[in-house]
Amino acid sequence: MSGIAVVIATTQGPVEVAAISAEHPDVNSVACMAGSDNELPISAAYNGFVRLPTGLVQRYFEHSAFLLELSGSIDTGESWKLGAFVAHALHYNGRLARGTADADRVVWVTGDIRRDLGVPAVGYVEDKLRRSQALFRELAVRGVPVNVLMPAENAAGFDGSRLAELGIGPDSVVAVNTANDALAALGLPAVVARNGIGRVHRRGAARRRWMVAAAGAVLILAGAAGGIVWYLTFGNASADLPLSVADVKLRDVLYGRTIHGTSTISKRPFVMNLLDGGVATIEMPADAIRPPFKDHGSWWVWSGKNRICYQFTRFSQGKMRCPFISVEDGTITARRGDGTPMNWDFRRTAAAVAR
Amino acid sequence: MITPPPRPGSGEMAFAERLFDAASTLDMLRADTVAPRPVAFPTLYRYATDPAFEPDPALPGTIAADARLATDFAALLRRVALASIPPAAAAATEGEIDGRHAGDWRIRIRRVQANPNQVWVIIDYAGRDVDLPQSLFVDGVRQPLPPARDGRFQFRLDADSNLVRLLRDIDSEVFLV
Image (cartoon, rainbow over all chains, first blue to last red; front, side, top):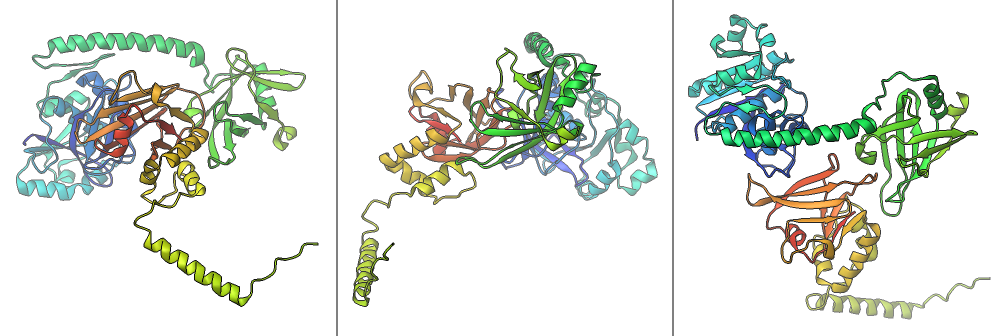
């Protein structure tokens, strides 16, 4: 198969896009090593990069679930996103090669991509180029042309002689201000930046575009409705809002306390510690069935709401919870949104007493 | 005052050794013809509750082959599981299914488009509880679960694997432990 291969630049070396496969929409998108079932560390971020409401791939390429197979691992960072976007554009247009071996052209990419399709500067570009020199030499021997795509701000830092030292012809470099600069360099149709579902200029897809647009409108309306409900519930539960005197008083009452409670379903007792600086920890002892559980997170007073909010990395699925708190005659009581009391026992610690 | 039991004499000890040797030899001779020894409860318990415990690879088959053991193991799982999806709740249709739903839990099976020999197993939790399971059991077969992401476990399995066959079987019971 011929086509254009995408190489995503990393500080550990070039990583080839081996394949992209559209999967069932029920599936979360996954990034994995080619031929392996193990997900890469960026897999969760890749799912967010694909699926609406945050995903650019579904917005512009009409599908919500993909399996992205890479030749190597990408552990962290954002600069894989422009390469992934270009790979999806090539896949959408039927021009993505399965790695560099069968490609009649290779595009080496580094860059992040914003929702407005802007491409900001990224770091370590020279390191990434150095790490890819062996690949550049191999492709030159094979006579395979290479395009080097990087953010325009980064490209401005390389002159011709510097690029020549790195084994790159100055004509190979494409300075990218927006994602469409990258697509244009590869002869791909531009995408139209807008809110909701995006558009790709492609013949014969008008009807499908309308259907996708209609589906997008429904999704947006549903999302907006959900957003309103969420906002009415938790929308202003930020930890950064200014606190009233009553809020500060409540925070001072809670600071240094331990909350002894019992999980409603597993019936496991837990101890939550409300520490200084908004740090919270939680522990559940081992029982006959399960090993001990420990987690950390944050807590804060919800401004003007008589609520305490907490959020842990794993406890309660990592979701923010904000029960109501009342203090009467020195007794602290936590209640759910419907007013029913929770089985929480607030106990004073040495830190609380000292305060 | 507690009186210690009388110590056996040398003749009695020699007789006991011969008897033990004879019983062991008989066990070895009959090893291929008799049913396997019952699985000890501590082994079953660790298999059910400790995801790091690596049992004899034959254990799932042993459980499946012994109706009484399978019943006991299912009873144990019912006690320790965070959730179970009983056969009656599996689906409204007969035969193979590609999804299950009970309470806050939903399991779906979808074909991997990139590899028709594999399926995605998607387990979604819509509840609010703290603890999430670490293993999935179907008819004595255990599958370690990957870390959940936003209340979802998702992993790939061979489409013709025993576990997928059991998940698709409307009569099987699924436990999340």
